[in-house]
Length: 174
Picture 1 (cartoon, rainbow, N blue to C red):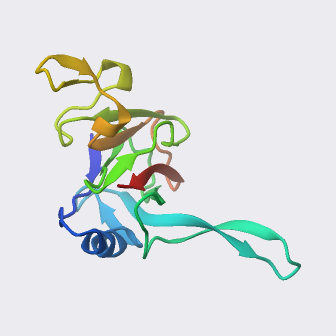
Picture 2: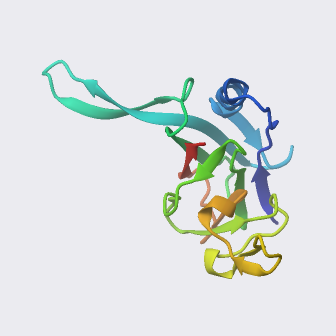
């Protein structure tokens, strides 16, 4: 049984509206692939910041991405949980890359998953080296990370019962 979890969001034209939507959409939202799906997901949009500890050391902490500016990097963290008593096969998590952001190359992470990308709004996914888009001259050219519209992780092997895994990607505000 395929389980695809896909997030959508409005494409507001103003940066602040985009940030508000991201904040509301990606902070602690729990969604399931289908009503009967045992797989759930919590997605957060966070940024990394340096914080001083009591002993004066600086440590990097992740905090909600409630306010970001052009050039800032946002980390989208998906926490996937199999709430059933058996392994979930073919678990796929798909995220759109917000239109106001650029995917940060080589910044998608996850253990034991196949990561693929889309350049057509999530209609088709493939490995980066196989993706093509039309260039300014109307001829096909290899896609670059700036062309990516969506990212997908396919868990392999199946997600064991009761197990939680995280997948994440980074995008920079245009």
